[in-house]
Image (cartoon, rainbow, N blue to C red):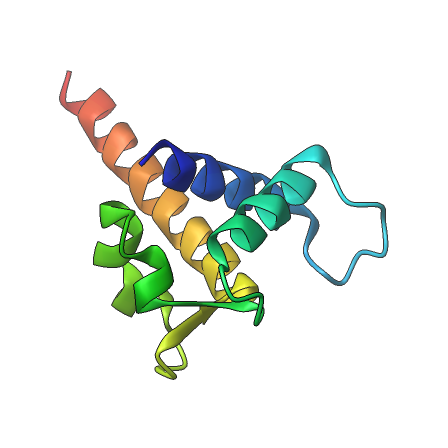
Amino acid sequence: MQKISILLAACCACTLALAQDPAPLTKGEIKAQREFKMLDFNGDGKLSRSEVQLFPRLAAAFDDADTDRDGFVSYEEVRAFAVKYRAERDRQRAAQNTEK
């Protein structure tokens, strides 16, 4: 579970410098890519359901992350999901703060 949190946090960090900017990779991007590759057991550049089975949060979010519905989650899909996840988390925190 900690690896998923690390992966999502790193993906969130790397979304600030999307692929259009030819700047060097940030520490967050490097870490996110390393975590993704670690989960990609067969090295095909995408995550299958079986590769994320050991990580319940990622397995539960698999269908949301698999935006092209090909049964795999690419690194770009993980990055996009991380943006969506972070935005939702920020909205929830903001709503909680306004209730206080």
